[in-house]
Image (cartoon, rainbow, N blue to C red; front, side, top):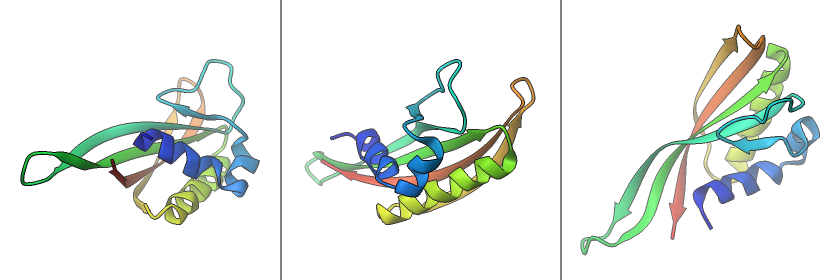
Length: 119
């Protein structure tokens, strides 16, 4: 299983999160015309973990998970539940930031998580 699949499983397992976004959890981008709020996740970086024999046995993946909504309050509520889902999975958030896309008129709250993925 990939780190992305593990992350997706952790997010969808949180009932309070799926109550807010249903199945609107996407890699890379929200499909056009999608209802909000929704979540987008991206792999920001990957650091391989190797043995002394140069065998890759795991990776430390940095994910950026962004909650998009029509209001800041709604985006914050989704991001709170994302943070709780990450903590339950043993990969708590390491950063949180906000944003606004003026062109779309949408609010965003992003959380970063370092995700340990063993092979």
